[in-house]
Image (cartoon, rainbow, N blue to C red):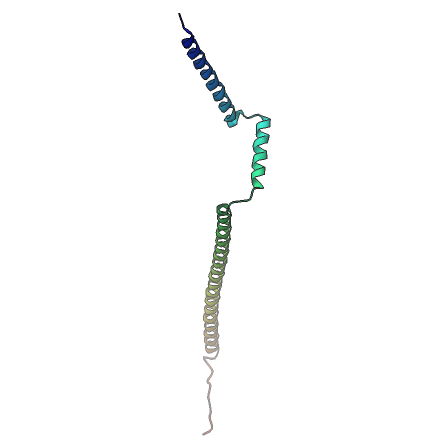
Length: 139
């Protein structure tokens, strides 16, 4: 049958297997799936997140945060400048359209006054066609 050495080796092997199983089960408990978290685990996660906010940020984090702020400020100033430029271009476009319209109206007004003057002169000529007009200049 089995001698003493074989029994001891078998017991040792069984003990090692039990220890490995217990250790594996402990590891599995520490790495649970996020979907399987209960309320106490969620509270621990929230606590750790809030606690992390109070940690002193690293130089790299501060540098990235400052870079992002500067980039946002720069982009905002560029956007504001572009908006003001677009606005000024729109105002200029409206003003040029207004001046063109006003110039056109002035041209029409001048042409209309010349036409009215020509019509009035023709009317006077028609009225005075049978009259003789003498211009006497002393010499």
